[in-house]
Length: 321
Ligand code: NAD
Image (tube, rainbow, N blue to C red; front, side):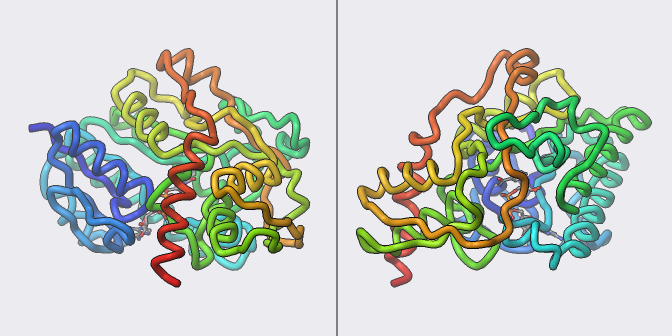
């Protein structure tokens, strides 16, 4: 039976990935500091522990896996990664996790390792124009990410590529662009903008006002979780080992995203724009490389993902009230 290890299996993407791998018949070990918050894990075996701890990592790698997916990271939305308050722990925690996991992969002669990088690696100077950002994979250098989170991702990409070069490890590196969907954090400070707006709109009555960070003209693209799963598995099973974007190229501004969520909620609320951490002015996934290398690119519309996501968050909000 094919085996996989998912590091970060208690998180949003990890919970979905374990489910998907299990549905394909793999034996899956999950590891995370915490159990999934919103669902039971489908993992065949779940180890709760800290991947910064080398002893735990040795216990996790007590066997050889055909596939390792490294998703564990100290991360959150703009309110967590762009304020500067968490920079030291973001850099330290995620770097130590990657150093430990990769070394264990080398010792265990792991078949293939997937690393979850981020669009946050792209240079700030290429994302100043909200209508014309450049996120082509090769544009990551000369490097100038706008956050320490992005710098750590860039460092770790290089670490994975070095292990591939020097130790023959097969690596796959995805630069995710704003993944959203059911089972994601939707409150507490680590939530991302789609979940935060879904929560605010679910809590507001028709005609009320909600707060939005920035002037709302900053642009992004958002990828629904099912498409992300498809991209991860297609990349892992392809022969392409360079970093590649996994994201949607349907770019919208935050005001448009809010309007789309209002449509899904069948509600009209007013937006009050307040100062807050925003990140770069514009970002969109450039999907030319993934199309060329995998013969596939995400194609579902943003609205198709917003509808089930809003319904799920609305249910969570109601359950809490
Ligand atoms: P998440 O925060 O839901 O999941 C990350 C998981 O890592 C959490 O469950 C957390 O408990 C775990 N973790 C953190 N430190 C750990 C430690 N020391 N030991 C064990 N587990 C630890 O995030 P996610 O949205 O599922 O993202 C998964 C990966 O994808 C992350 O590496 C993230 O940086 C990357 N990524 C995500 C997005 C996105 O939009 N969600 C975008 C770009 C990149």
